[in-house]
Image 1 (tube, protein in one colour):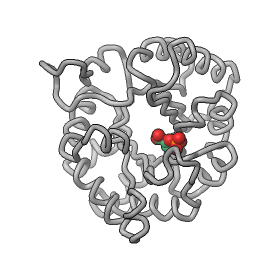
Image 2: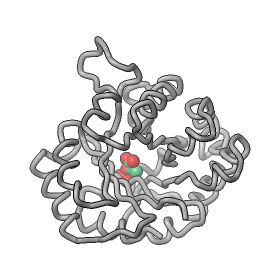
Image 3: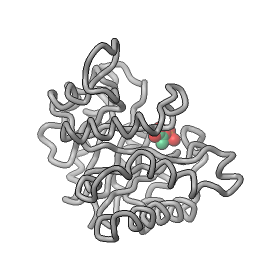
Amino acid sequence: MRKQIAAANWKMNCTYQQGEKLLDDILKADLKPALHHEVIFAVPFPYLIMAKSLVSDESSFNISAQNCHHKKSGAYTGEVAGEMLHSIGIKYCLVGHSERREYFQETSQQLAEKIDILLENHITPIFCCGEPLPVRESNNQNTHVEAQIKESLFHLSADTMLNIVIAYEPIWAIGTGKTASTAQAQEMHAHIRSVLTAKYGSEVAEQISILYGGSVKPSNAVEIFGSKDVDGGLVGGASLVAADFIDIIKALK
Ligand code: PEP
């Protein structure tokens, strides 16, 4: 079975102490996820080491960065390099979250460079894609998401592609309380898998975890995650409440 993932995206929330308590409260639930489950916390840079040390005894729990710079190293004041994340043992990093594409004008080319830097540093990119509302309203979401995937991922070989996690996040559903319907999510996930199949073959496409993101909460997680091509979720708001994220982890199939 493909890896089923519950990934928390804390964004720019929580003080150090609040983050520590949140993680502690989730770990205290003693969840014991199945072998094909993985729980990931994408935390702000200053908390990476603390979070990594808190989950160090849990085999299915991992820590992710929320971003890295697209250049290897150098005179980029305030930025964080892939090799820095590698040097502290980080295994995942979000790439191309819609907030970064929008507020920091990240381009597909830069995202492709980030993907390469991360893979060189043995870090699994969680590649985010998704359409804004006007694109959905004009029914062009499939073309939009397909282009995002082609532009930033299709330079990879089939072997390398196996080290990518994809998160489909319709922008109109992020932080809005509005969730894609289960049918809309499944339809897009199946489309993404068909795009991957056309390029890399079904053996590769069937192994890639595709997460859904956009107002996932305990009340909708079981149904959304239950869809055939949905392999868990990338969760913003609900990941900041321990009880909610615990229920979302329990919703993994
Ligand atoms: C996100 O930021 O990746 C996200 C899906 O946020 P929310 O769950 O709050 O919609």
